Length: 125
Image 1 (cartoon, rainbow, N blue to C red):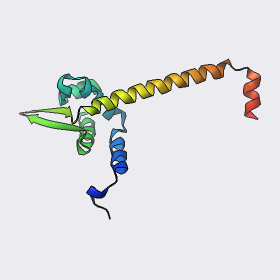
Image 2 (image 1 turned 90 degrees about the horizontal axis):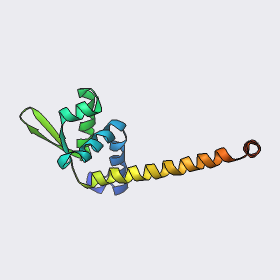
Image 3 (image 1 turned 90 degrees about the vertical axis):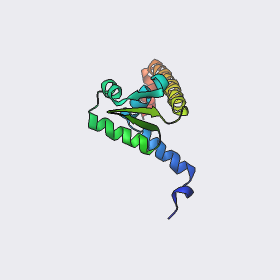
C-alpha cells in the first residue's frame, strides 16, 4: 500500500475533480469567487443556492475535505472562503472552455441541419 505522500499527482488531481463533480458545489464555488474577498457566510450560500442546510453542509464538507474551501467560525456565523485564488481562475477557464465547446457544437449542429436530407439518409445506411 502506498502512503498519501507517494500518491501520484494525477490521482490527487482526479480526486480534486471528483470533489468538483456536483453542480451544487460548483455553484457554491462560483458564489464564493464572485463574493468580496472570495468569502461569504453560510446564510448567504443558503439563500443563493436554495439548498437545504443539511445538503449545503455536506457539499461544504466535501469541498473542505479536498482543501478547496476553508471556513472560519465567528460567534454563531460560519464564513467560507476559497482556499486559493487560483480556484476562481480554474472556474473561469472551465467556463471559457465550455462556452467555446458549446459554440463549436452549435456550429456543427447548424452545419448538419443545412445538409441535404438525402445526404443524411445515405450516411445512416
